[in-house]
Length: 82
Image (cartoon, rainbow, N blue to C red; front, side, top):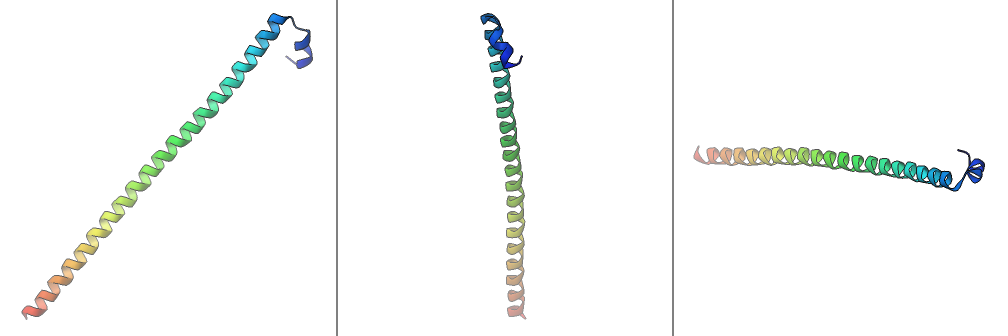
């Protein structure tokens, strides 16, 4: 209802219109909060996934370095034995 008609409406109707507007604003606010929460959950899931990928990469690199060091030690021992 346009504002100029609201002024002409009886008090009960004005209160009802005002209540409907507040309900709409509350609904909009709730939807905004839900969107923000969803983005926050999505970001948390993304961050967790990225951390798991980095951890796995670190484990693989550490194992590779360990294997190289072990191979170098074995090569040095063979040289000394021959």
